[in-house]
Image 1 (cartoon, rainbow, N blue to C red):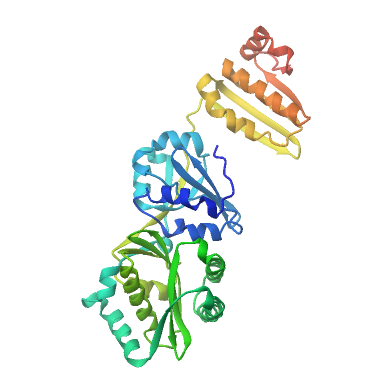
Image 2: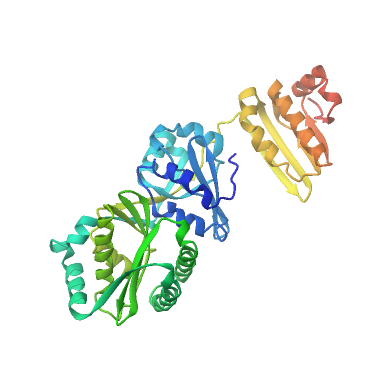
Length: 405
């Protein structure tokens, strides 16, 4: 099992090493978004077997993020068997990784698409030039804004944070009157405030557009590497016709000046107006993301189940506890004993136990005693009983035999 832990800004450098190894980078992997969502989503991180893992909670359920690293170099069957519990659902899994999993894991995974969370990958040179019929609408709106308004462009600095936040709040209020998903809009505001409060610790850059000295639009991007960015936040006052199109054109322009060629334009959360606008920016490609649930067929020689009532736990083990099965199941078995005072180990149906299996029983007894608890073993069959008696373990455990066997 993966030992997830809390993380902070000092982990960013290591995290970025894993992010840069990915062929596709979903916007949800943004360092800023992950740091901002730690508390509300209870997001935690782990580094295991050349991969960076995330676990978080949404709507009361536990999810994994897509593991980050050099996907083509990973033995996914081995990784999933060792670290991913059956029933685990991954969110925001990029299409490239899904195809790898399909090839290596087959029907052990179930895949569901959600168009609402796809990223738009923009080729900034195309957006800055605005040539061709497909970009005519954006070009005309951008030109209209330039023609009708006297504007100024200003880099975002701490000196204007308070003014920018007030503009954001007002723009967000107007937006919420036109969209359905208010919860996601609030999350966006929470993340934006986090970004302002930690601006110097993040790889962020952006600008505001002013008309008559007042902010009418802003854009904030996050630098991922020398040629790629994620468009994190943007708001505009729609009373100024064409300001949105002008803002994205200007964003492309200043990004190209920095050497950035492509950008993740974040998902549209299913809002029709946002989708209409983003599709008219002529994305280079859609970064498709999926839900993936790991549901392997039960091919293990043993079956493990547990039922807990406060400090009391009944743990059932059946089948064949061979050396291989014991090595795989050890952490799974010991992890369910946390905080248990009274353990009842039900071995009804356990047909065989290896020396590694016996060591697991000892490890269980040791952990229960360390927790000032007791362990009772019941329904021990004849074959397992013989092993316990011959090894002297029958004297160590509090045993009851399975009758008539």
